Amino acid sequence: MRVRPDEMAKMQPFMTAQLLGGMATVERQRIDLGRQGKTSVDIPVDSTASRLLVSVSKDGDCAPSSQQLQLVRPNGLPVVGIGAGVKIAEHAMGRMFLVDAPEPGVWTLKAEGSGSTELVAQVRSDLEFHRFEFVRPSGDIHGGFSKIPGSPVMGAKALGAATLLGDIGSVRFRLVDDAGRALGNPTLVTNYPMADPDDYMGNVALPSVPFRVEASGVDAKGLAFKRIHPMQFEAQPVAVDAKGFSVVEGRPGMSRVVTFVVRNLGPSGNFRFLATNGDGWTRGPQPTSATLGRNQSVEVRVPLAVPTDAQAGDDHSIVFTATREDASSVFNSAVVQVIVLRQDEPEALR
Image (cartoon, rainbow, N blue to C red):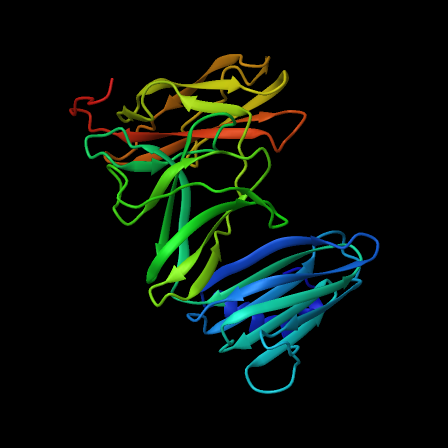
């Protein structure tokens, strides 16, 4: 919520609604009216919703919004700030609506004026798009899958995993851009081999632009619903991987080197490298930067020093990031876990 300090008091009911949790996103998109225009956005509200929160806020500079915003009920009547269960707040950057016990159906946000703004519509509901991640096989004896440490890579095979909570009858998935336009329709299914049988999993063809994942379908009663996972993803033209195991072992006082491989899939460019650990177990990467042509790669060595007072069983992370110097939005990362052994304990990983 982009508001001025003197507007905070009247925004309290809207902030409290979000802080209480249980809010699921049913619509999210950028609206661009240009110099002068008008548009409307449908907001699907299903039968599980006990509260509706609609936030419309200018996403550009901090000049006051020049848009007229109106929320219309499924019966065609506009929402007005009169009566129980309704709150409307005007602020410098936009407008917010809070409606208790919203009737199921398609609500409509009407916008008129100029400029760009962002709409986020949420409902309080037990039906939730709880998780979407890109995953890979865990690689241990227990099987299963774990979240990839960085972003998916352009042109690579990407395995997506989704978790929905609540009584679902059927569901389909869609990739959308920040204006709500469809970018793809991945097929995600339950009972995927070696995965939790209730998770929806499958291969995802990655768009060339940032995207979110949308789930829509019918609930156990046969009534329509729609949910949008809030995380925005973007396939990257640079890949970062740990060389060898993504878990290393070390004893107190031991020094060793962890190696990462950086591969450039885009145009030639210079990349800078950063390795971090919250407890200072690493020194600077070697090298600290490199110029990579398309499809070129480099190995980067990261010295690791386990402190003498480290406790056996401690688990620490080394996060390695490669960022393109002339485009900070082009980056990727990998993580290596460091497990501390007792002095007399043999290494299981070599």
